[in-house]
Each structure stands twice: as C-alpha cells, then as structure tokens.
Length: 243
Image (cartoon, rainbow, N blue to C red; front, top):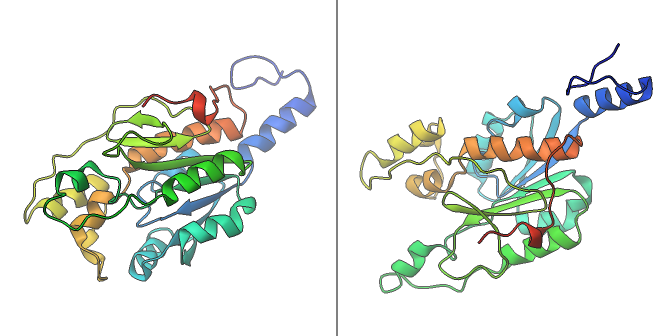
C-alpha cells in the first residue's frame, strides 16, 4: 500500500504519480532587487529543484551574488522594469524594493537630511503583482513612517505584501551598534563577508538592508507548500492585512 505524507493511503496510482511530480517539480523564481541574496540563502534547503533569476542594478553586488549562487541567472538592470517585461515567465516572485524613502529613520532625520518623496514604485509593484500576476508573490519592505497605503502583514520590523499567509515567526534581531564593529557584527548575523564588496555603496548600508535568511527560508517554505498544494492557509492581499 502506498501512503501519502499524512499517513493515509493514496486513492490511486494517478494520485501517487501526481504527488510525486509535485514534489520534484521545478519552481521558477524571480528575485528582484536581489542585493547579496539574503532572502535566497536557504531556499535550496526547502526545495531542491528551483530555477532562480536574480535582478540587481549594482554591478559589484551582482558579481558577488553570482559567486554566492553560481547556478542562478543574474541580470544587471532595473528590477522594476524587468518585472513588467518578464513576470509571465515565473511561478514565484520576491521583490524587496529600496526602503530609504519609506523608513521611519528618514522621518526621524528630516531636519538633518534632504528629504525625498516616498518612492511609489513599491505600491505599483504590489498592485501589479496582486491584480495581474497569476503566480505567488512576496513584496518585502520596512514598516513606513506613514500609515501604509496598502495594508501588509507585519513580521518583526518588516511588512510583507503577499497572496499567501506569511507564517508567524520569531524574527532574529541584532543590536546594531554604530561604529567600527557594526559591519563585522552584521557579517556574523548574515553569515556573509561584506568586506568582499568593492563598489560605491557604504558597507553598513548594504549589510543593514540585507534580508534575514531565516525569514527568507520560513516564508519560502510557505510559498512552496502552496505551490505544491500542501495543506496551508491561502489568502488574498486584502484578507491578509494586520497592519
């Protein structure tokens, strides 16, 4: 007798074959604003048949990403435009648009820095993915200094917009101490040597903005379960709001 993963018998050989195929199916993923792949770091531990295309505009970050994930396709270019041009090619899309114009840190420094309008491409992508894209998606960003224009799912210090229910998890935190040890501590936290970067951006900025790999792994497991049709809760964007 063939048993399924829940201990029950398969109703037919066809059901067994379908389940086997779903477990081994290739999942095509688009990883936008990929940076150094913090979100992507543990994905292979979740599902061993993934095809990832990463888009990053900083050539040095893209080079280091390719070194870290040699099997991924890496595109140096505008992630916002790449999404519009290629969204139909993927089963799952993760987007982490730049956060500085939305962050509460920006508001707290409003008398010290030249302020910019909040970058509305964040909400363009959320609406586009929710209403146009037929696959699963996650958009990640900081909790903004204003009431979010589209409510998201709050986990730790971040907001996620998605057409899946983001699992509740205890976010890892690091106490960022400004100074000479900050980047070193973030190297330990992210399990990555940021000192390899030789580009134009500040190391502390890159290290602070990298998505925590544990959050990336937990969320990706939920995505895979949904795609493979394992029992889990699925929701629409406006049903999933808790912020």
